[in-house]
Length: 221
Image (cartoon, rainbow, N blue to C red):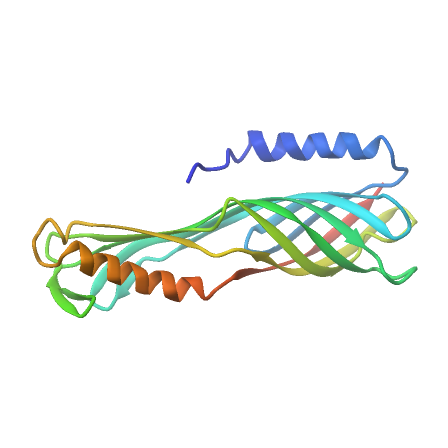
């Protein structure tokens, strides 16, 4: 998957959104938070009416190591996440900070797992010798996904500090790719690898969403 250019694309898009939105609104929010899957979130929000607002945010920084041993196979890898989102906030209760949120996110969310071992592993029911071999698995989340959720904040009329919270889901399923030397070694067939890969897809495919949560500080100016 082609990676998002972390500095140029997200920050330029964020700046363009901020400039455009600020020309038609009297109050804007800049906010900074922490959460998952992006770890650190920066954002910009502006009201459109008493019941509606729009936001743009950039979340990044998650980089978790997957190094360890799985079923006798030494695994090295990582989980990384970056998202750029555009959202609409609906405030159904006048004067309340409660929001219903919908939008889209552009994602660079992936997990890479590279497996090697001097022992054995089981591929589609066949025990194979992993000495000098590799079995790599790459999971990638769709590049663009819908977002739905609820939140609190971005509603006060007075300027100054406040807080916000968001909970929602990114709607999409992971794509699974595998790469291995085991077929060339003659220990298993491509059909075995395909069957093992399908088991992974069936497992990961049951996860139709990625939970998202973020909480932090708001400055209204």
